[in-house]
Length: 411
Image 1: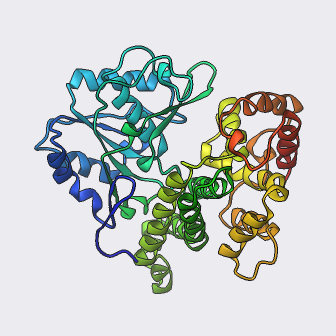
Image 2: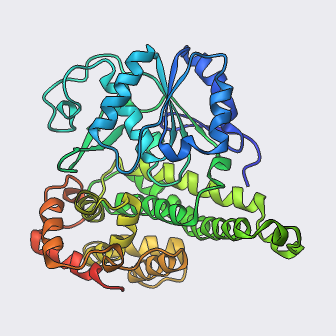
């Protein structure tokens, strides 16, 4: 278990451990930020500890922008830019999961750049990123996207829901305050979905085309951390939910054995492992992602599915498609989670078992996808996605149909 703060300078400065968020005021002073805009979502803004963060900034002239929910869209970014400008902010504190992190980066970019956000889309930019980008301090509250250590923002179009990637190394937060205690209250379903998002990043990064042994090594260790800590994190979340559901009288008579079942030290250890795995996934996928993400992005576009949930449901089918293209790599990953594995298919078996153990949906049917028409819409979006060209083997429209069909019913 992590008991003291540690510092990773990889790729940005990360202060990691219980209580890391308490260094926020010192961090802002070190960066010369005096008028921060706190960017978060509606749910996080209601949590008790968020008021503590706002209270910590009483000596600063801070404002909070929390009008965010779901998959982030351009209009939310525009509102955030208006809030940043009205406050005359000189920096951003991003608090939350992937959505607030991505919106914070987009605000930091558009605060000093003209035009529309999508003018700066990666590989399709019509304008240069040549003006200052507001400094960001990131405080992650989920272990999934790892966006706090990423150099890109994924924002959807309000009307089409198509996702666009904005990329620039300057979008990387200056400092990350990674505090696992902020994850202790995450519900089991969110813990599971975000954890499967992290796992998908790690697996797809390891399989992605190209030669990047640094990313490969990080990906393998991240997969190991997920294997050790995701199910425990979900189990602890379920135990806390069960305990909180008891009425006061029942809690008063709760026997000692149940009390001990929710072991805070072990829970922090599990959350620490997943928080590290999440950041490692985001670092590793500098190498690229793959077909799982293209399928998941289409699900978010067409069905407004939570990104981590979409990845988790699509991952087994996508990996069955990929297995024959990289059997040696699959075997290496399989032996990370099961040293006695004799073939790469053992990795897919483990993914399916893990998904079941943490309560993830097993199929697209469980997400409400039933019709051939919907699958046709999904394929149309997925084939245009920027992730699958990095897949270890080419993916045609026919292949996408087959993958979605494989994921349609429970494995």
